[in-house]
Image (cartoon, rainbow, N blue to C red; front, side, top):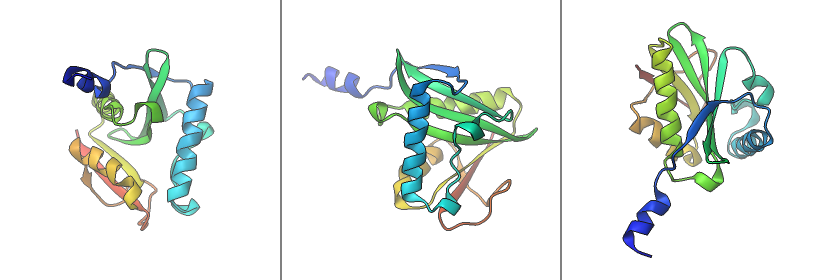
Length: 165
C-alpha cells in the first residue's frame, strides 16, 4: 500500500450528524453495547450512562453520526439549566474507532451548546484506566477536571470535567 492509501484508511470520515429519535435498531444496538461496556468497567452504583428511555427526556437532545448508511457514533446534550449543559452518551461504533468520530461529535456538541447560549459544558466519565482515552480526548478539546456538578457526588469511579464556552 502506498503512504497516501495508508493515510486515507485512517482519515476521519465525512459524517452526517442528525438529531435522532432513538427508534432505529442501529442506535439501540450501539447504546446496548455502550451500557454493557460501561457496566464491565464501573460498579452499578457508579455507572451514569443512560438507557434509551432516559435519553428520550425533553431536556436531552440526542444525535447520531452516519458515515453513508453506517452508524459511526452518537452523543447527547442534556440541559442542566439556562447556562450549563452536560455531555451524555458519547460513543463511537467499533467499525469507526480511532478515525476521529469522537472529535467530530464533540465539536458538534460544543457548537450546539454555544448556539443554545450555554456558558459551560460538563461531563462525567470513568476514573479507571479504561477511560483514560476519553479523558485525553476531552482534555484535548479544552475540558478541565472539576468537582462534581448537578446531582453527582464524589465517587472514586468517576471523573468530572468542564469547559467554559
